[in-house]
Length: 480
Image: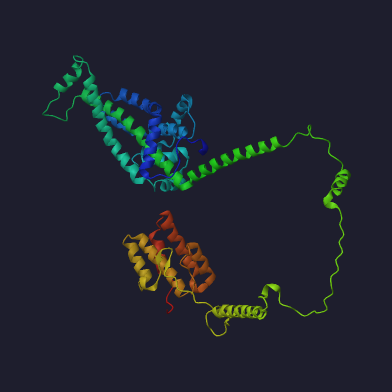
């Protein structure tokens, strides 16, 4: 994957902007995408048409069932064209058998009705993930744009029916006059008293038109899913930042190349240089310069027998020398006063620890990571209240209450100095440094469960949460 050769603008987008990106990629290479879609589905279309010619409704159902084959080929085409490649027809034909057999049981049986199919086949085919890694990656990429792709996927089948009827009407309109005898005969033999007993000719024609409409809509639905997939990876992996850094590196490389070339051009070639003089000649020439001529000047300085200290001249104001003394005394007094003030405001730092007084009493944290942890905001029986919330299905609120209560009790009971700016990791480190009074083992386990639910959407099992509530170690609260 070469991000520097991408053929679209890579930047974080909203969900529907990502859908527009996918539609634009399909419009750019529409006929190629439609062709490879039909190449993948054509064997099923022909074989079922031959076997189920007299059962066109079943033929249509089988055709719809094998649509993901065509979707995978469209994904193969636009994913490579996005990154600057232009797959040849030979490579597309080699890819078709792989599309047929790759995870056939999972994709065509187990996950055939998945509403996230246009998005998850990108994880399956482009990243090659399987098993647990595939499930985790699908959960990650469907967090953004999930509702958009579900709406598009469900509406696409309804739109296929309407487009199929539209194609049917266009076909009827373009049948030359006098050449529609078979169609008119089928319409006339349709008994209004038995409306469900539709002639086979009509069902077959309608089915073929709907199949053509399915191909058109599925190509664009696959593009929408790929657009959302690219947008999600841009948000998660920072593709736009990486591209900006690469562009900056290219610009700097050009500048450095120009500078190096300029340096080489400005350096004269050795063939044009005159012979360099010897060091002795250079020294002789330098010493002969006028600036190096030695001049001797003798000055007689009268000897001053007085060694008493005098005020510097800058402290003398005319003939009034006592102002300088006043200035110096005032500056010294100001310096002593400043030192005394600093000692006074820092007097708590010099207090001894033998009297049982705290060195510094920091204000108690009331909000940590945006969560209220003051005693007034918590119930008296925290584990019971959390367990009741959990059993009522309010999982986030239950674990949030248990975690907030643990932080509040660690502050009050364990005397842990948790700050309002601390993260989960900071809280764990402070509790571990506080020792057994803050119950670090329990707090570490609760933090792990809380972070898994809050950030990874991994809901713990009921016995695990019930065990955390039963093992609540905080039994008393320190007085305010």
